[in-house]
Amino acid sequence: MLSYQHGYHAGNQADVLKHAVLHAVLQAASAEASPLLYLETHAARGLYDLTSAQSRKTGEASKGVLAMPKSAQAPRALQPWLQHVQNAGPQAYPGSPALAVQVLHKQARFAFFEKHPAEYSALTDALGQNNRVQIKKADGYSGALRLQARRGERMLVLLDPSYETMDDMDALANWLPRAMRRWPSAQFLIWLPLFADGREEEFGAFLSELDEGFVAGSRWSRHEADPSALQGSAMIGLRVSGSGAKKAFAIAAELDKYWRAT
Image (cartoon, rainbow, N blue to C red; front, side, top):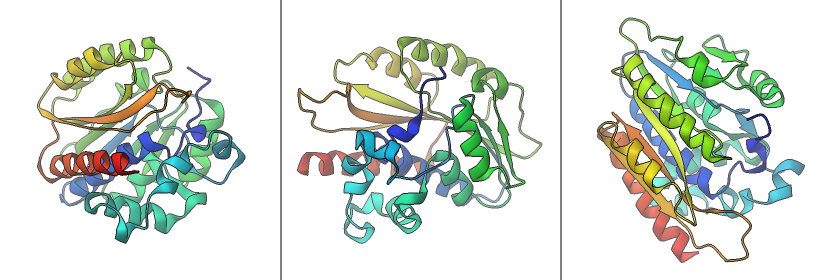
């Protein structure tokens, strides 16, 4: 799908959960001494200007990260990620690739796949000068399976497709079991939109049953006139446990309370 550009949606309510949970899992991964290969199949541009015309066109960030309080006054589980992005500022909001490069230790390697020409170019400008980063202008599902972790190297994979059509769900459902067989010790993080009509429920149940891990989600109130079909989002962590999983649950629980209160 070459039409999707995340810049219109960066920093929105779905991003708050996704990036806060990712930040927690990255911190837990960085606490381990062994090297890591971090991989994204749908990387997008890496850094976002939330004051840009593209972002202001939808105004979604103003309801998401830009509406959050200062980190010191935020719900406790959200504070580490909020402090990170607020220190960066709204003109350098880190998407998942930049967040990973910024958080993970120097033993980590990165492989990012992005086939949209404009998004690939922006990602290359943002992160391409880092010699630990490999950026491929290619379909992540086909290209990623050619990669393999080095001896002694852990592996963490983020799956964040656009879900513009039901075909996106089918593609992920077909690819993920293959990837889990290819990388039997890799950890996987999957972002899942929660739609107002519940269309994702069977798909989400299928994903969560592929291996042990966690499912952490939050929902917000949605007005009937809201043009978005989203009513929440979730992160599924497969083979992810320990402090990263515990923090993911805490983030989702605190966000649920926060969305209801605002």
